[in-house]
Length: 421
Image (tube, rainbow, N blue to C red; front, side, top):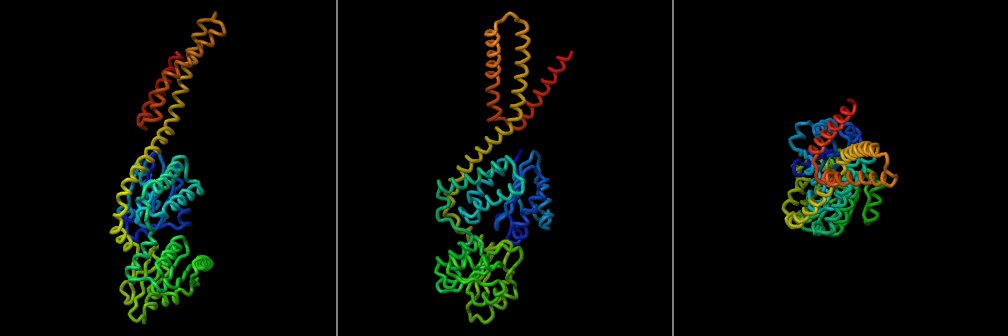
């Protein structure tokens, strides 16, 4: 079974395409169901910065993954193909290990991705689309991510996209002290954004969410105000800035709402930082008194600031290599089991036949002598096949195992033909 990957991320696709390929929970479960027949094992990972489909199969299934992702998202195959990457074998393995470690994130070393990788794996297991290969790979990826964070400095001072959004706001507004801030979205990203806003000295904090109860829980924990979703236009008019990070698949802040919120602001523009994928805010950069940033702007900011951890990230690549080799050893050993079983069975059959003929020719042997001959036959066979079996487990390639299997099958069939003559 070969690990295969079809994906797009912040390096290959802009915010618009990532948004159209993003999968919320119901769509992710539905896509897994559709992919169940495409490969023996499949996991789908979808975040604001990537949509990736991992598969384990004997043949190349990436064209099928592309076709079904296109049909599910209504994005043409040509458009996806022109912005995606298709990786196989160790390249796909190393990519997932790097993703889990935060080395492939927009903000190098960010911590949220580890939980997102675990969630993707859990969703695959719940849907019944995983098996031994991807279960082992994702377990290794989570272990590698934890190890790299604890043994290297790659995550030291690492920030999230939400933190980057707050830093961008601080730069744009000079200071957040005393500012009225509004967070749209009460999930994990909204919580991180709100905490960073408070740490930056923001004044009044308001939380809006499509489910008001979730907004109330988060606002209460942070001493902020929960805003009913139907009062979002009013909250926008009162805000100095908005950080939008809801998981909605459709824009929640329309151009009309922005136009209404930016009228009569007396020279104090409304700052909007939309870090949701798909976008929460309709593009309206042409409106006066509005400063609008999205994930593409955040990416450019992170590109300028990523060099501080680049050396640590390079050192972490050694950990990635070690975990990749560990998975490769596991896969070789597992893939060799059927052939090893076949060879052991054939060797035992030959031993049994030769022992039977020998004992038939020596009828006067005592029970002790017969036992000694049988023990000798066991010892000879085990010593003869031990080293070849170790090599099969640790070093053989798929092509070598296939050739050996065909050779042993042919030899077995020849032996059967000779016995029947």
